[in-house]
Image 1 (cartoon, rainbow, N blue to C red):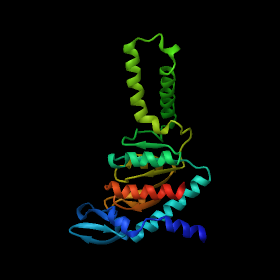
Image 2: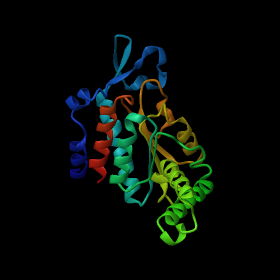
Image 3: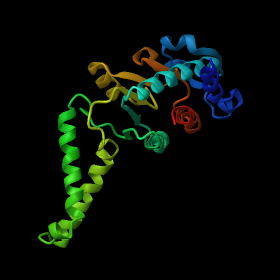
Image 4: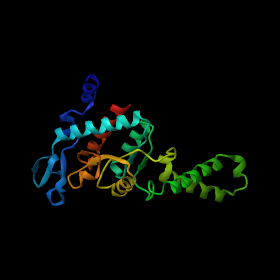
Length: 231
C-alpha cells in the first residue's frame, strides 16, 4: 500500500498537465470513436481529454513497465516525431534501454537478424576507423566516405546497437506516427505502451495513455514521470 501511494505521488499534478496542454485532443472531424471513454468534453470543435483518466492510465502503464524491468525485460522506446525524438532518447538512455527516433526502419522487429547484421557492420566500421593500423591502407577520400557512412548508420542503428535480443515491450510517444512499429510488435506478440490522441485507436495498444501527442510539453511530462518512477 505504501509503495502504491509513493507511485501515486509521482504522478503529475493536474495544474502541470493543463499547463503542458496534455488535455488537448484533435478536431472532431478526425475523432476515433474508441477514444470516447477518455473524453471529458469538447470545446470549439476540439475534444478535451479527461486528465483524471490520463493519470489513471499513466499509473497502469508505469506499473506494467516497472514489472517488466524488474523481471529483466527490455523496453524499446520509439520517438517518431521531431518534437519527441530527443525526449525519448534521453529517457531511454536514462533507463539504459534501446531506442529508435524519428525514422523507423521497416523490419527492425520482424527482420531482427538482418538488422543485427547491419548493427555489426556499423560496429566493425567504427572499429576500423578508430584503428590507425587499419586505416593506413585507405586514402583520405576513402576515409571521408567511411566516416560519412558511419554517421548515417549511427543515425539509423545507434540507439539499438546494444539490443541483442528482441524487446519485451515497445513504448511509442505517438500512436498515430508509430503504425509500422506497432504492427510489427503486435505481429510478434510484443506488449505495447504509448501516448494516444483522440484521432487514433487506443485498442491498438496494451497500455494506452490518452494525452496530447503533438505537444512537446505533454510528451515531456509523460516521459519525465516514467523516468522518475522507473529510475
